[in-house]
Image (cartoon, rainbow, N blue to C red):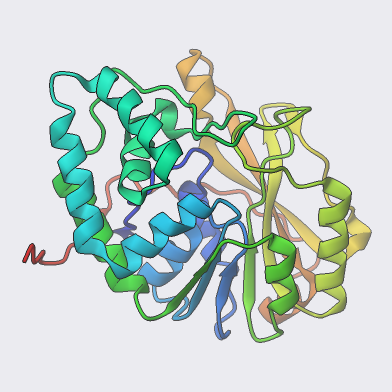
Length: 310
């Protein structure tokens, strides 16, 4: 079982349950579309395991998609830029982080963004009301070593280059363009944490508006997989998609909660995965099937490529 490369650290990434999600992929489809890409964990897993050969990754966060475009099409420069910043921080890590953060908020440079993601607390993006990145640094670490970062960037570029469209549009625009021959994977902003504006996202997703989009996809017979909240222990996060919408809900054991571990607790996180009616038919799943499993990536082999620094 190979280790999937992940150059962009991202809290809330679905990398821990990626292989479970891949198990619900049909054998044939045209393009894997991620309207809420984030770290694009599912596209990377699908590319690594040969489950898809064409990709469309989208996120409303423009600097994030600019970073993805650099990783995919210009791996040399983004790797060099990160390495330069990583080396320049030595001996003044905390001060340097805030300098880079200010520069990023003024310029949006992809190498600055990658450095901030590698150094910030819990790999968790935070924005203020003006849309500026304002997360603090994790002063216990210097960020991922440049050699490891470079290797993952080059592997991702190898997997996705010339096969991937990158966009930064509203998710509704992306969903309008998908066809019956595509497979859509959606991991929208987490609905169960903040009552007001969520500082992790440029903008939230209204539940009722999103439900309306889901219903449109069902009526159009689009095959899709949706990750949308769940529970930790007995605490439920967010509202379930109504059963009469025409989708199947499956609860997946995602393992011990990282936050609970930090607090000395032992709570298991369960993710809700929804499958569209047409996908369920394509997969020929039995009625009312409930799956619960954990597929960790620990102990797996890293995919490597020879690196040309010229």
